[in-house]
Structure formats: structure tokens, C-alpha cells
Image (cartoon, rainbow, N blue to C red; front, side, top):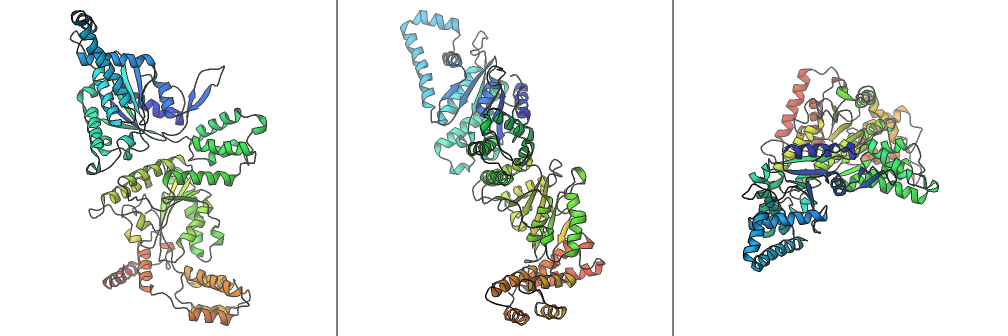
Length: 614
């Protein structure tokens, strides 16, 4: 098979890798996974017509792999077995007849002469059976796979004189292989599904097939969607089709605009290059939809439109309940209090997030009691980074095998995006453990996430922000250095000047004329208040102010009327865990903390645990 010289996503590197595997005989069954439903650039070489076309993956492969010595057969579930050339069908049919009769061409002639019309009738019956099998394969994947397997058998048939029945090698493309061989527990499969699985398992494991020159290429979005009895065969290798990179998107935009009349040219808020940058993560199909819509309406394509399109596309790929693309509207200037933390974030965290290479920070874990303001603060950090923010909601699926598929889609999205912040709220519920007591799916997911966090290819491009009130429930492997364990930040209830800043912020909702004595009075009334409690109080005051003037006595009365929920011990336990897991002395309330102080925290934790607090 000739190796590709044309371009597609990432220069069609995947095509070259696939060609090397099949040409070398490393594998006879190959899985092409990933961005298999996208458009692929094909250099036609026709200077008089369009020198570049964008085609589907099957058409791209067919044009690339239509080479002498190969018979290309394409099978799609709802269609017939398609041969690239009409003459190929006749060649395969003739080889199939010779294989079924066991005779070479000379012997066939002798048999015809000796047996006359009876032989012709038998041969015609075999030929009719072949044609009937081709018809029966339409919409019947079990028949199709068995017929394809038999084609491979007859392809390597050698007659008694050592002559091959078929001089060319078969190259079989199977579209949507996951629909024909879906991942499922064997016990839940029907009889036809089990038979189809057995056919393919025997076919791909057959030593004769492995030593021959025929090949099968299975097209599937994710290897995890393919039944594990096939996907995990050591004889089956995988090549991933990546998402288009910046140059691919830029080339497509140039191709698209070149074909537009002057009155339909794109109107952009900025340059074509910035559009290519901002559409990182989009497939060429999705990019095509975006620019076609803008060209048709003639309106200016705005940055916000592009961000919305990227967000909608990522949600469609991963699912609305899995990921959300967002751009926080507030920054660190809107964060009340936390003066020491904000200095640290600006001087140390943000510069390391903006680095690339080994000096970049892979991420950070943020610990603190419920209501301390973790999410609000680090949404502001994400805004300061001016990067795409992906909020992970739920990586686990109730359906068999779907969690692995979701993860693979997430990985492809992250590799396609430029710079991205992965924002994981309630991280202890998203990621489980890797111990023997954890579910197999949970262990596998957590292990893959951990590997991704420390992947050198993603360092400086993907930043993980894990929010949790229960830092101790995160896997120790996630909390180790080299992952988010490089930096574990405690977010604690405001004290001292930060607490007074919160009080002034609360009162500022209804009055600008409260003196220090008034602040001191409120300080006494709001003991134990968290950032969330202060925000709730400010909201109530604004609602009260809408009905009339609010005096300081009214504020005190309102505070006095409120009874705090009975979560004090739980918040104290979470605070102690945040203190013990903190990786920077400078972020603790007292930077001069001693080993004795830490031991006292641990003793208090054990005391709370003895009372059932966890």
C-alpha cells in the first residue's frame, strides 16, 4: 500500500501510521478512531478544476488507498458491500468460485468439457449464491461479516499447482463498526449479535488471516464503543484520527473564502488567524457551519458568536451533563477580602499557569469548608488567565462502557484546544479512589485522569483546578506532587481586616455611612459567618432596601433573627483537613505554624471523627 503524501488533519499523519502498520504486517485488523466523522482535505492534483476538496473519511481513504494490487471493499450497515471498481467485484467472484470448487482455471475447463451442462449449472448455482449473499448482506451485518471472512479465505486460496485464486490483496473498510459490534456484556447479547461477535473473533484471530496480506479497517469513534472481545485482541491495533489543528482550520478558512463571491466575503471582528485560534476544538464540519451561517447573513462574525459555537460543539461531543464551556464575568478585583490569598494568586499562581514547558504548573487543588468561597474565587482566577474554562459536571455514566467513551472524548477535546482551564467543582465526588474497594470503572477513570494531569504534552496547555470541601477524599495519587499536589490552597473563613472588608461590603448594599463602631457591633453579631453567609446577608439587605430605608439597627435585628444551620462541626472538620493538606506555609492563618500545631489539628480531627463527623 502506498503511503500518503496528501494532507488531511495534522498532515494526514494518521494515514501514514496506518499505512506503515498494514504494509509491515504488524496487524491485519486496524481500528481508526477519533475524529472519523469530520472533513478531510484531499489534494486532487487537478489544476483546471478544484485543486483541493474536502471529503468524508471513507472517500478520503478510498482515494488514498486505490492503488494497484489492492481491492478496496467498503461495508456500511445500511448499504451493500461496495467495491471501488466494478471489475474488482468480478475478480473476487471468480476467486470465490475457484475456492469453492477447489479447481484452477485449467481444471475448470477440463471439468466443463467432461461434465458439460451439469457442470455449468453447478457453477452458475455457485455464482448465483455469491450474488445472493451480496444482496443478503444489505442490512444484515451477520451475513456481511461472514461473506467478508469468506472473501479473505478465498483470497489466500492456492490451487494444487501453486497458483493464487486472487492476485490482489483485499482491503476492507467497515463503517460504524461499533454499531455492528457494540460494547456490551456477552450475556445481554442476542443470538445474532453473539454469532457476529464469534465470526469476527475467529476471523481476526485466524493464523492464516494474520499471515496473509488482506486487511480489515474498522471505523469507530472510540475503541471503548467496540465490543471488548474484539477491541482487546492483541492482534488488533489502533490509530487515532486527531482533531484539526490551527493550520488545518486556517487552510479550510482560506479555501472557503476563496470560493465566495466578493459580496459574500466573511466579515470578522479580527483577523482570519485569530478566528483559527479561537475555534480550537471545533471540527471542520462545525467550523463550516459557523462560517456558512455568517456568510449567508452578511453580519459580522463576533468573538462571542465563536465562543458560543465552540461551547455548543463541545457540549454536543461530551454531553450537556458532562461539560460546560464558560467565561466568568468577574475577576480578582471583584473578590472581597482574602488579601493574602489574592497577593499569592497574582504573584505566584497566575505566572506559573501562564508558563509553558517544565516550569508550568499542572494545576491546583482548592480545599476549604462549604460556603468559604472556593468556586467564586477561582472562577475569578480563570477569568484572569483569559483562557477557555471547561467545567466538568459528571464524567461517569450509568451505561456499560460509556464512562471510558466520555473520557476519550474529553482527552481529544483537551488535546485540540489551545489553553484551557479544567474547573472541577466538588472534585471528591467526580474522582474516586484506585484501591481494591473502588469500583472497576471508578478506578479506571481516576487512573486515566491522574495520567492526564501529569502528561508532559498537556503541561502548560491544560490547567486543573479541583474544588472540594473534602480534600481528604481525593485520591492520594491526585494529591501528589507533579499533579495538583504541587499546590493545595486552603480557603478559610475571613478573619481580621478581611472580615471587616466583608462587613463593609455587606453594609455597602444599603448604606455608605457606617463608622468603625457600627462595624464593631456587626462583628460581634456575625461571629462564625462564612463568605457564603455574608453574601446571603447582603442579598437579604438589598431586598429589604427595595422596600425602604435600612438603618444599622435594622441590620442587627435581621442578623439576630437568623439561626445558623447545625453544620458547625462539619465545617470545622473540613477546615482542619484544609489546614493539614495545605502545601504553603504562607497561605496558613499563621505562617509560623509548628509541628506541634499540626499535631493538635490532627488530634482535633480524630476527636471529631470519633463523634461520627467526617
